[in-house]
Length: 270
Image (cartoon, rainbow, N blue to C red; front, side, top):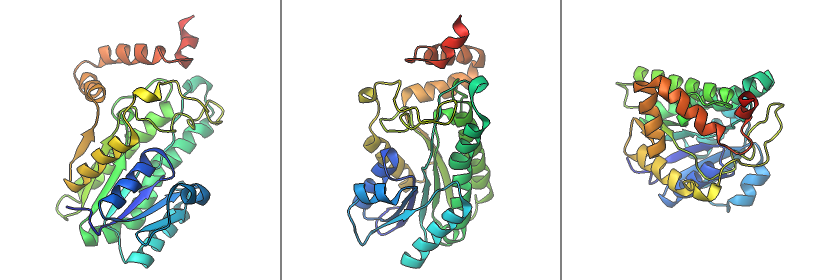
C-alpha cells in the first residue's frame, strides 16, 4: 500500500521518532494526525497545514485516546493507519524503583496502545488498514535496569500478535517494529527510581541510528505490510541469541549494561 492520501495517526509525535514519522508520512503524501501531551510542543515543531492535525492527548487516559480518534474521523472521515509510538523508558534497579514508575510505563507504553487501537479499530477494519506498534528489543529480551520498560514492551507485542492473529482473514494488518538504540530524547526523559526524569543519556547519541532513518524503515514496513521488523544487527543478534543460548544471553546482556555510564548494576558488583 502507498501512504499517498492515507489518513495516518501517530501518537507521541512532538520529538524523536514520533516527530520524524510525522515529517516522513507528510512527505509521502499522507494526511497526518499527531498527538502529544503538550499541544505547545506540537505547535512549536510543526507548521500548520491542511494535511496535518495536532491534538493534545495523554495516551494513558482512555478518554483522551477516544477524543483523538474521534477528532480525526470528524475531520477526514476515517483512519487508515495507526502508529502507536508514544512511550517512555526507565533506568533503575527494580529493588530501588517505586511501583508508581512501572505503572506509569504500563499506562503509557501498553495501555496507550490498547486505548488508541480500540478507538480506531472499526474505522481501520473498514479501510483494511494497518495497526502498528513501536516496540523495542526490550520486548524480546528483558533488559536489566529497565524492568518496567521491558514488561510494557512484552505486553505490547503480545497484544499485537494476538490481535494480528484474530484479524488474519479480515484484510486488516497488524505489525510491530523494534528499533535499536535511536538518537532521541527518550533516555533524557526516562524515569529514575523515584519517577523523576533522568535528564541525561548514558549513550553517545551521535553514534546511534537517527530518528529519520528509523522513521523511514517503519513507514517502508507499513507500506509493505511487514510482519515485524528488528532494525539493527545488534538487535537481531540479541533476539536470536536469547532464543538459542538464553544462559549466554543473560551474561552478555548483563555485561553490556554494566558498562553503561553510571550503570545501576554497579550496586551489585561490590
